[in-house]
Image 1 (cartoon, helix red, strand yellow):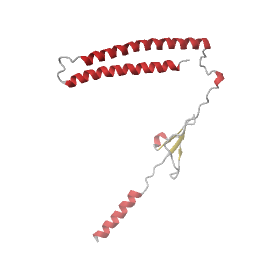
Image 2: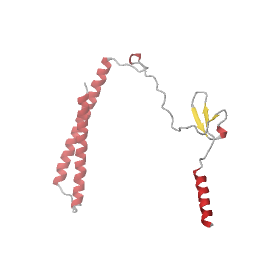
Image 3: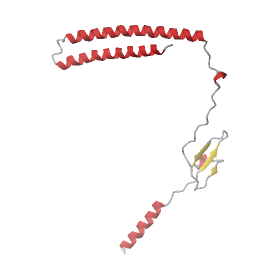
Image 4: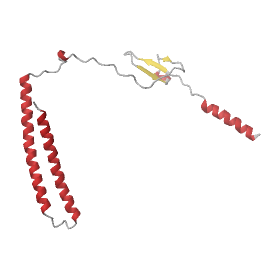
Length: 160
């Protein structure tokens, strides 16, 4: 008798768990045409109740494409004359060449410091690892300046 009652209780419980939850869903469209969905009755004044079997997506649709201005329309962008552009390019070249010269000097100084640092072992570096750590810092500095020089040369090669 108890087994039969347990089976009935289990069957009723499984039906209750499997029963779909229902709630009223409201579709609201504002003055600008934006659509929102809500299940809060207080926010749904003037909204339409959807049928419970209608699918509702919570993912917003794609944004409307904005038209691009024509290439010859200008679009409010200032145009630059060829002479102005050439002047800008030459100024950029001058700045990059100055930076390259400075960075090349820094690279030479870093290489010199590395060479001198490798030749000398300081008194507080009885532990060989301290020496290696100091030298690694000098090597890192050289590598940094080498990367900077390469980047500046690459930028200069892109200029007309």
